[in-house]
Image (cartoon, rainbow, N blue to C red; front, side, top):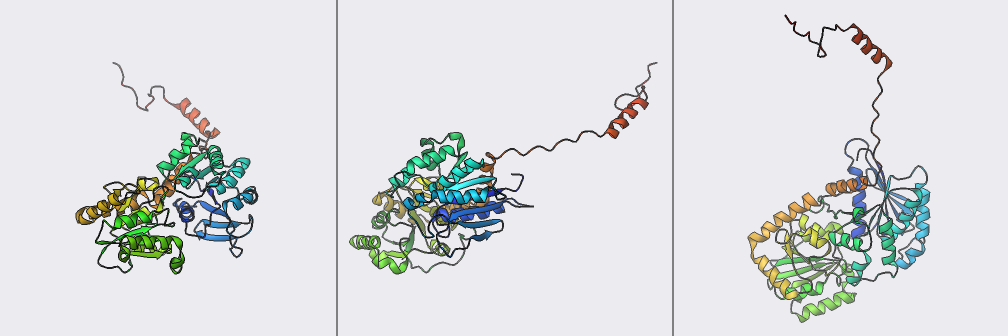
Length: 433
C-alpha cells in the first residue's frame, strides 16, 4: 500500500459498547490508521447509526481515526426488524457523505445489516466494497440464537455483491462459500487482541489457594456454563469463576444465573463456583491472570476474543474445536481441544492437565507467544490492508521522461567527432603489424 487511503468502515451495531464486533471495529480503525508508517497516514472513518440522542456527531478514536454517528431511525437501540425498516435511511446518510469530497477509496462493512446499506451505496457510486459477516445466520441458528427470517437471503446477496469477503475464521469462510461467495473473493483474516491491555504481568484479582478455572461469556447459556459446572465435579481441587451475563447487582434476579446456581448446589460444587457478573473489558486481564486454565466450551459460535485475551495473559485454554477456537487454540501446544457437551471427558482432561505443572507451563509460554506474534493488531491491520489492495486499482507507474533535445544534439555531436579508430568501449584497438 504505497499511498494514504481514505477508508470507510460501516456497522449498524452499537459501536459505543463492548460487544466483540464493536471492540473489533474500533480497534481495527485505530490500527489501520497507524499502519501507514512514516509520512501521511491512512484516514479511517467508522460510520454507525446513532443510538443515543446525546451522542456527538463525530468522535475521535485516535490519530487518523474517527467514529461518525448518522441519523437513521429513532436514536435508541433497535431490534433487527426495526433496523431493517431504516436501512434505506442509513444508506441515504452514507450516500450524502460519500458523494462529494468525502468519497472513500474503499468501503468495509461489518455485520449483515450494515453490509446491506453499505453494499448498495458502494455499488451505486463505484467504490470498492469489502464485507465481514462476524458470524452467519446458519451458525447463529446452530448456537440456538434467534435469527431474522430474511437474514440468510440477504447475507447471500451481500456476499455475492462484495468484491472481497473477509472471514474471521476458517469455519466462517467455509460457510460463506456454501452460501455462494466465490472462493477467489474470500480471505481469512482472524480477530486480533490488544497486547497492550492483555499482558502476562500486571495487577490481579484476589484468589484463594485452589486452582482457578475461568470462563468469560456474554451469554451464560450459549457459553455452556452448565457443562463447566458438571465438569467441575471431576476436578475436586479447583474452583470456577464465571464472568458474564447480567451486571453483578442483577445476578440474584437473573433466571439463568438462578438455574445455574441450583445446578451447582445439586452437583455439590456451589462452594467452588463464583458468579462475577458482567465485567468491564478493562477488568478482564485482572481476572484472567488469576486463572490456571480458561474454558471456552460453547458448542457453536464461541467468542473469538476470549481465547486470544487469555493466551495474551499467558493462560492456556481448554476449548471446543469450533469457530475461532479451532484456529486460535493449538491442541497440545497452547491448550487443549475438548468435545462439546461432554463434562466427564472435559473434567478428567482438565484434572490431568492441572496435575502436570511442566506441561501447563509450556502451554502458557506458547500461548503468550502465539497471541503476540500471530494476533497482534499490527499484523492483522497489515493483512487487512494487503487484502484491500486486491480491490484497489494499480497505482500508475511513474512516466520515464523523454530525452531532452539538447541531450540528443550533444550525443550526435559526440558521435560525429569520435575518432573512428576508437572502439565502442573507448579504447584504441591494437595495430596489426
